[in-house]
Image (cartoon, rainbow, N blue to C red):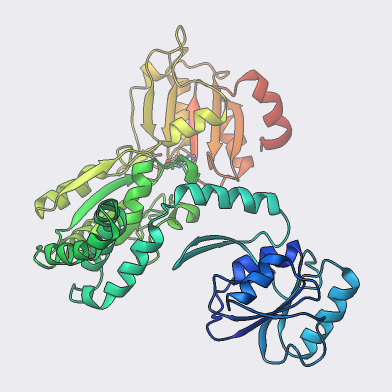
Length: 462
Ligand code: SAH
């Protein structure tokens, strides 16, 4: 970030602009929205500038800038659209201590003016450090369409009401009040006319002040395989509203970024073998926060209902009389099969599909090996890295062919995703060689689709 965005107070400050043409007009239209004292130097100003001067909105001096003219100014704009004149005026401005901007000359400017979406007092400033003005304009247009024109009025009324709303306890109660104002009651009141709107604030506050403290709640939310774009809209909303987020090791930083800034983030991450926080500790943590009235999001990698010990957590929560709901997520098998361009089921190949865990609480997990060893069967094995040799042994013993395709997908959906295409016979050796460190899912009975196989061999196979 070469340019640091700030909002500069211009109330009562001096801003000087040199120029009287189109570039000057464009900047002045923005500057006139501020409370700065504006002086324009222009021997031959556009009629609009003369009109603004006649209305007393700025001071017009009908000559070029001279030394001494810019003393005490906070900002200076060189808008003569003439490189020689701009260089001359900018040199004076710099010598006299003003932050200087030359229109359309990023290099010699000390600051840039962003594209602005104006819902005063809500202002969105968009900058691309000069790299992509087209992009800035597109983002501006998008925001203009998305932010209701009444947002500024709501914010102004809200600001005047801040002290009154302080009778609500800090935290959730206050946030709920303001959220109702900006997104529900405020827009509705404005639709009936601005006059009624401040009355609506009083009513809303009375309603909230008499309301019981909101009860705690737990949402068991699937974070998906790691790519934030694979979160559901419901998961995003739950993260937006959470007071406390208790997450496991599989949840990526990019997803945690989406939690509210004030939310408490707790890492209840567990190693593959040997928990760093016991399940009982985690259950107690969830219950403790929800019992205090917090909106708790228990955020689990993939889908919370797949190999996530969800039942144990639900039992703890219900035993404490706390309400809960589940938000499903994309499980690792779905993300992994997408990565190899395959389908989990296929007519004529497999009409059933097994999700297995490589190990359970007692060690390597046992399964119906005879059924799994049949040709055409597809199994998605979670937590299967350490148990690869065990699984291979059992399957071969029950008659599976050593040539059965096996694919291991590490970090599915993430930038560091890797695909290991092998066979049942070569699995343990290939896996050891690949030295995977991230979460990995093993498919028995599935190879990457042929078209992708070539690509993976060149770029991704380990
Ligand atoms: N609830 C999770 C699974 C938890 S068990 C889900 O639905 O995906 C943890 C195992 O999931 C890991 O050992 C690994 O086998 C698998 N896994 C989770 N995320 C993965 C990812 N991004 N890529 C590959 N495997 C993953």
